[in-house]
Amino acid sequence: MKAQIVNDLVGIVGDEFVSTQPAVLLAYSHSASVGYEGAMPDVVVRPANAEEVAEILRLANRHKIPVTPRSGGTSLQGEVIPRHGGIVIDLLRLKEMTLYEELRSVRVGAGVTFGQLDKFLLGHDLWVPVYPESSLACTVAGNVVVNGAGPGSTKYGSIAEMVLGLEVVLPTGEIIQTGSEANPNAPGPYLRYSFGPDITGLFIGSLGMFGVVTAVSLKTFKRMKYFDYNTYGFDEYEQAERFIIETKHNEINVIFASIYEGQILEFFMDMLGEEYGIPETDWSPYTVSAILGHVREDILQSDARLAREICERLGGSVLNVPELPRGEWDRRLWTFARASYAHGWHWRTLYHHHTPSSWHRVIEKIWEGLDEFGILGHTAGFATGHSSFNFYPHLYFDPADPEEKEKVKKMHSWLAREVFERGAVPFKIAPFWFKDVPEMDEYLRFVKRLKEELDPNNILNPHILRGEE
Ligand SMILES: Cc1cc2nc3c(=O)[nH]c(=O)nc-3n(C[C@H](O)[C@H](O)[C@H](O)COP(=O)(O)OP(=O)(O)OC[C@H]3O[C@@H](n4cnc5c(N)ncnc54)[C@H](O)[C@@H]3O)c2cc1C
Image (cartoon, rainbow, N blue to C red; front, side, top):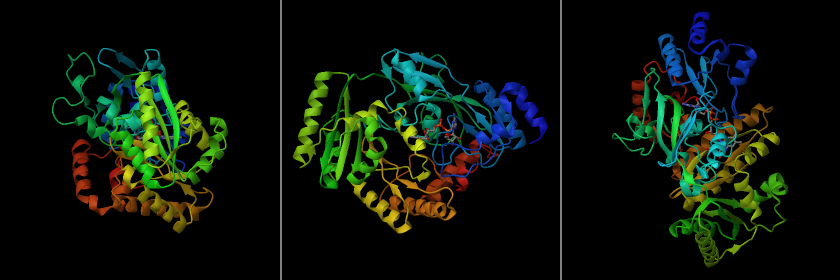
């Protein structure tokens, strides 16, 4: 990169916040995506506010330099790797948080992590009840642009459902505000669907290719105090699927529910059983781990009773192992992060949504693929929102074995196609979904038109619509 451009960046953010040092660039060449190769940027810049981000984007446009926005660096599908070199904009300095208690909302800068937000809201007896299991490192803005989900999502849906508005710097440097805050006289964030079409939604799940999100406004809720943790065992997958659906139909306040196959639980027990204090258990072939929560104890108790009745009516049994769901909930901010990296795993995942009733069809395909491709892996997922099921099968490989890496890539492609045929959808734009599913070509053309309009020089995350991994 030309020295003059680096000097111009220094002119925007100050000397302290620009780096071309190889050790720094190396750190930004990787992310939590252990299944993807790193790539070095030419320069890293750390702006303090939206105006500085705008100036950086205008500079990048003048020189047609690719730009990768980066916040926590915890994305798992190689999203934040700067494949084209260029500028990485690190957004972690944008740390402001403003609570609007009367409006039941909060506004956070792009550098605020879920952990920081949760600590802040705890002081007000509030929360934003959707947590990715990377909450201590992952930013709210980063999660919005990948449209993540996690503990809390069974009741509240993906993070998209929490968003009331965004401040976004467009690729050409204009700063826009969406939602009710687009009116400068508004008292704060209170309505997402204002001024016509859902422009906020354009940026959710966009992987940052339509603009850099500099602030996110979210709904807040009263923190629940009463919880019921239980595991429900079933012999047949239909019973477990039906259980999830029936709890929804009956408006039971399940805040997080996962279906586990018995064989997966054995693996889970090796990894976390001791830490969660889970006793030796004869797991059923299909187990639902469920956390019910409420602000009122009487409603919680009645919900818990009803959940047990439904389980038994369906022919299942209440396993009375609260330690599993309790561990999942109490340690929701960090367990998975610690456990997976501590074990040194390398994996690829294929995030997608399908429905609880097609859970078994997807499971069958995953196991078929693991057998056929000769890969170690497992399934994992949880009910998310109104009627969908968030799924993230893990495909493991040895990073020192190029053949195994290649096999994992192939299975990943194959699986994207197979789950698409079973009605699954991704919850964010993702190159491989388009590459492997030609049925989406027309849709992709439309997205490309939007991209051309918003980002005429294709500077912001240019790889995404090229189908590059
Ligand atoms: C152990 C572990 C557990 C995880 N569990 C979950 C989980 O339960 N649920 C879940 O949803 N995810 C989970 N993830 C994935 C990851 O945490 C999410 O993808 C997260 O939302 C990424 O946020 P981030 O701040 O780290 O973004 P980054 O990784 O920095 O960036 C992600 C993408 O967004 C773009 N981007 C980042 N910030 C901005 C911005 N401000 N404006 C525009 N574009 C931007 C980047 O260019 C990139 O394309 C997990 C990850 C790990 C490592």
